[in-house]
Image (cartoon, rainbow, N blue to C red):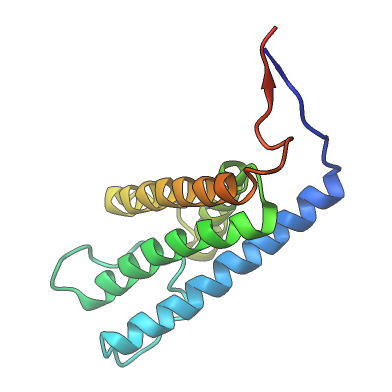
Length: 152
């Protein structure tokens, strides 16, 4: 089985990755600010995309805002990534998530060890990949080169 597809140059990949990162963090701050307002929290924390140290309890409103913002950001990002990259959304989703973990570690000066944060991140990544790939598949279905595998 051989894959037939066109090669993409590294400049295009880097540009798409930067655009996906911009979309991801812009969405994160927009959704985070809406959630902060909806939960009527008195202090908007600019570290919302990177905060894994908040006490994970159901009664902690800040934790619920962080969790809801994370999941909604991943859900919406997958949809928008499909519009930007049109194929291989899973690759950009994984790369953006790895960059996010690295930036989170740098901002918080600690590697995230809270299992609830990793569970939320993993489920959000799953949502992003599934949504993005489905949208990319159905919008690019008419293109012959989308997922063309030839069987010998």
